[in-house]
Image 1: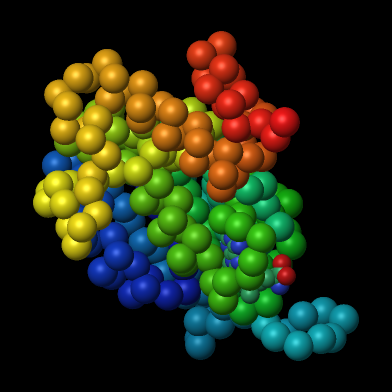
Image 2: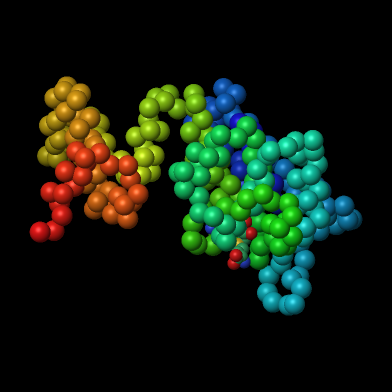
Amino acid sequence: MHFDIFSLFPSMFRGPLEESILKRAQERGYVSIAVHNIRDYATDKHHITDDAPYGGGGGMVMKPEPIFAAVETVLAGETGVPIILLTPQGRLFTQAVARELAGYRRIALICGHYEGVDERVGQYLATDEISIGDYVLTGGELAAMVIVDAVTRLLPGVLGDPGAVLEDSHADGLLEGPHYTRPAVFRGWAVPEILLSGNHAAIARWRREQALLRTLQRRPDLLAKANLTPQDRQFLAKFEPS
Ligand code: SAM
């Protein structure tokens, strides 16, 4: 998988993409990330990339020409690459969208800044618009990092345990249950006994029930869409108000 990120602030990506699992994924060739400075594609003497909004109002708007030039130059000859504009007005980024994006071999991400991006970028250049949540960031850089991170960990081989992503929260519509590690008793708080039992079938059932319970308690809205077995429903029925 290759990510092309288009930004006015490429140095923001130093650090977050160069640590831990993302660093290893790049070193091992599962993923490559190129950050392109939109300013390099501005052709005027001062490399201007933003201007005042037509019709007045505060803030500056990113100009379309350098963004079109950057994306068209970098993706020249490529077809089928999703060109994603990061915007709080886009479709919401979820685990399902991360899985969808993990199916591509190359993805382009355009980061806006200031008041946003000239509307013609969304209309005539981007093929998709994505928001990472119902709040407004100062720029699309953090949103791009969130997408790169969530998509990369889904790529085969990136995580040591390939089964881990299947049990993560949101993987199958539920939140994941609690995790514990040594010591078995910490400040008098003991790890649930079943986890020490060595009974793998019982542990798997307990984990499923904890996931169901946690989802019921914290995100009951998710249960309506989750893939539940008759056994799951029977378990949840115990917690229904009588
Ligand atoms: N004026 C714009 C609006 O109200 O829709 C918001 C502009 S925001 C200050 C600047 C840039 O940050 C956006 O162009 C976008 O690239 C990025 N951004 C802000 N919030 C975001 C979000 N929730 N998801 C993805 N990108 C976001």
